[in-house]
Image (cartoon, rainbow, N blue to C red):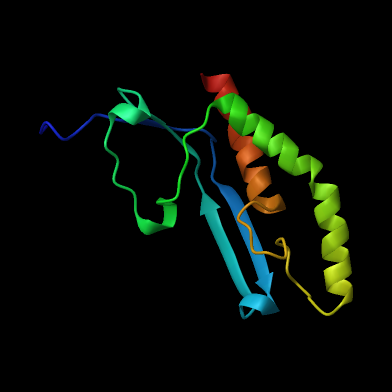
Length: 127
């Protein structure tokens, strides 16, 4: 192992993969993301700010937060879900169909939020 390498312990957070699906509808040429996803716990030997991690473009804009902050974020987003549903209903009423995500294309919508919530519940039992 070189000086630039670290040992990371990885374990599944869920026993089986979780199914994720997102219908984008006409605004993105009816694109559908559909995948089986395992959630993993990666235990780093040092704090994240002591390790140089090279991330690809897809996750380059990231932020490290505590489990408590993560839990609060999911709960707050779920509370906003009622507002989202009303907005979605209005948008569908005006011709936008088969799009289960928020109108702005934000990452956190009900399917990804449910994936996060399941992972968080299991993670709390593991640590």
